[in-house]
Amino acid sequence: MLISSGATIMSSRLPILKPRGLIRALNLLGFYKTRQNGSHAFFKHADGRTTTVPIHAGKDIDRGLLKGILDEIGITKEEFEKYL
Image (cartoon, rainbow, N blue to C red; front, side):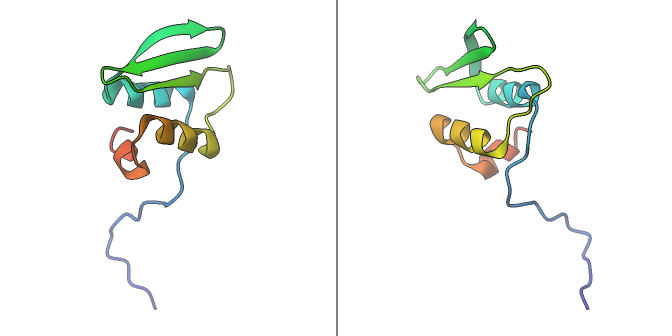
C-alpha cells in the first residue's frame, strides 16, 4: 500500500508550452527579442547565446523542440522549470 505524503512529484517529461509561455521564460532568463522574420522570433542573451522561437497561431511548442531550444541555450530542464 502506498501512503501519500502530500508532496508533489514533478514529471520527468518536458512540458508542452504555448509560444507565449516559452517567450516569458526566456525573458526571465535574460533573453530579449532581437528581431522577427515571419512567424519566427529571434532571441539573444547578453553573453551571446541565441535561439529561435516559432510563433504559429494555434500551435504549441512540443517537447522535442523545447529540448532543442534548451540545449541550444545551455540550460537544464530543472533550471528551466524554475522560470515557468
